[in-house]
Image 1 (spheres, rainbow, N blue to C red):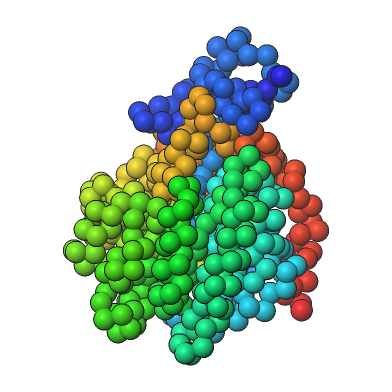
Image 2 (cartoon, rainbow, N blue to C red; image 1 turned 90 degrees about the vertical axis):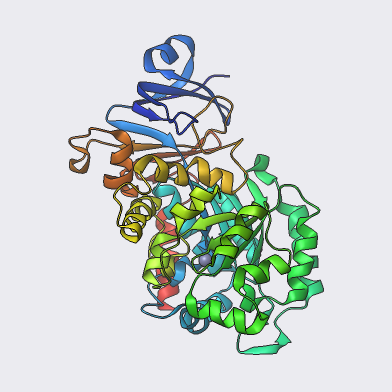
Length: 440
Ligand SMILES: [Zn+2]
């Protein structure tokens, strides 16, 4: 079987030595990278059914978005200038609750389309309480790689007495989802256990979810934590201890858990995260827009904690372009430390690729351009004015490039987007449907 050759002026591998191959190419067969090297060598050794020209292009690993809410995409622009708890209680939760099955599907496909259009090939996605299977179907249909699952939420912040859903019903539903969807599409879809956050989750539910996770090697717990000062204060009032200590006591911390945000921590909490092997998802735009704070990424990295990068959902960003996160993540650490050497370009690009893959326990499969890895690749155009002159491909990607410069996105060996055309969905029909939601 003949595969595809993708050429590029620069192949930015994000491998262990951060190798960059000038005038490089990659040979892809089925869903895997079979060869990486110089353009001429690859052309001489491999017979292909197609050669994609790499003139004025950088080839890089598909970006990894470690915390997203594709289902909130239809709420983009609907919740402006609100504090976290008001943002959630007044707009986002009622919005999510009001969605029909069709709304969930449309919202998720729209979110995934924006990620794919801007170079993301893998996401770690929290869906809604209801119709979550529609969101999984959306990921299957469009072709994105995802850890994805129902939003687990059984407590109303304002009415703690009545449970929104029975714990046994939630566990039965997600056990069924795991059977149906985990490791489907040749492993492209993996189920995830998405606890919303401590104020929305009963301790019974958390205990059952922790128990369920322990049955599976490859299913992770994904939750929000210590995002905002007021939220952290409410957790301390309710649990009698600070956020990370409460998670530790509830056995949520561990190598199979990803915490989104993790901003307001004391020294002992950093230690608990480090010692437990818990992973962190950093969301710089969302943290800035909701005035949550600046997470201490430099400190996490110095401690050896694995940190990936993320967009969060469309209503707190308001876009899903990882290139904006890459740039802002670097700048915020420099401002926090008043040190121009903090979070340099190479480091922050790794957070969006191989470190993101490690955050999601997928580094053996994705996150770098290496032989044997899944063919999740993106081509970035460098012919436009923002790329001239180009002294260094990495600083270009980190500081100058935008997701709009992506001209090709390949996931699992399949080209899902190329030169303005989505190959797996009817984008015009999708846009019309999304606009109709606004009118409804
Ligand atoms: Zn979030």
